Image 1 (cartoon, rainbow, N blue to C red):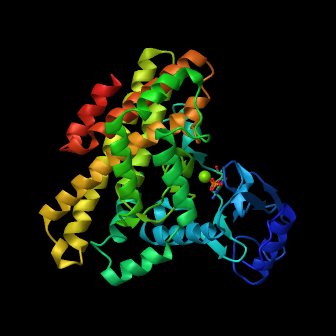
Image 2: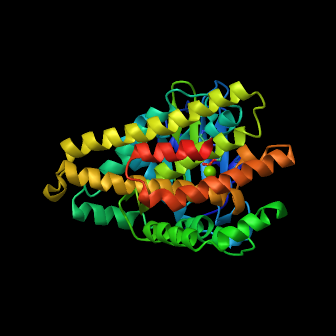
Length: 405
Ligand code: ADP
Ligand code: MG
């Protein structure tokens, strides 16, 4: 990283002009007049939009050597930009329809030039406004099943798999998840963030030995179960959508981990929005209709994820030892149990840990917001406690419905 400097908008323009000259990108004409501005609303990186006068544009994302939201006191490896670009390239080959396109990457400068998805919306903002996306479930199911299957031991040879595991060793970013997801919410820690009204509930979580055991098991699996190349941060802020399109961005937390983590995180974000709507949509019929849509989305997504996996495993499995329907079913049953556990853990850590969601924090009425937070904690606890005893997806859906009513 000897040549690294953090960019300004002027640097971004000069850099894009350089790569146009070298014919490394073809979005702009050779003599294009470019303008640029920084608009990243994420926690960690710089994000510039560079545009010409004809409406062509690209995104330049650059990692800083520290976490942007905290400052230089929280150093972070620049290698995360390489990881992000390489996950996007890997996932983009397996599921181009639902992965943002990488136009150029420079590891020394920790920057990636991406297609501009500015014509789409970020899912979180859209779901806060209760917008519905009928294709979201099938698109996410396709993305998660294809990327997870083709990076798993079912498909890769043991040698290829080990090479890929080492390509995606991502200790700094994994440590953030290990701490924020699995550790902090269950202990007293200065990074935790919750209102005093939740103090007794938080204490009951810290004293709940069964829940802490479940959190420890989920963390152990996250640490040492390199089943597939995860996106690693599939929350509603990492998904761009419109009625017909779904695109994943921002896999800088990517690494080889348990398949259930991504799908559980996605389901957790749907449920955070579900609960948040209890404090947002006042008209009961309207709220119920939207919440039913969210639950259907969750179920469709998991059902289709499972169907794709069963089909891919029956036709594409390369390891003879794994080529049996009984083994795939058993394997997927474990994935489901993990997903339910990670889903519950996402609900808890987004309520009392460092990183919250705007779905809930943006609820203006304090009492309504507190009621939603109590609900996400109870739901998270029950999912984590019951995850390993769920024997089928239908049992999981029944559990969900009983907890949400
Ligand atoms: P961070 O890693 O810092 O969280 P993100 O990748 O989530 O950064 O990007 C932060 C914001 O930048 C996004 O919420 C979105 O508004 C914008 N952004 C990122 N990538 C793109 C893209 N390819 N097209 C349009 N906007 C983007
Ligand atoms: Mg982000």
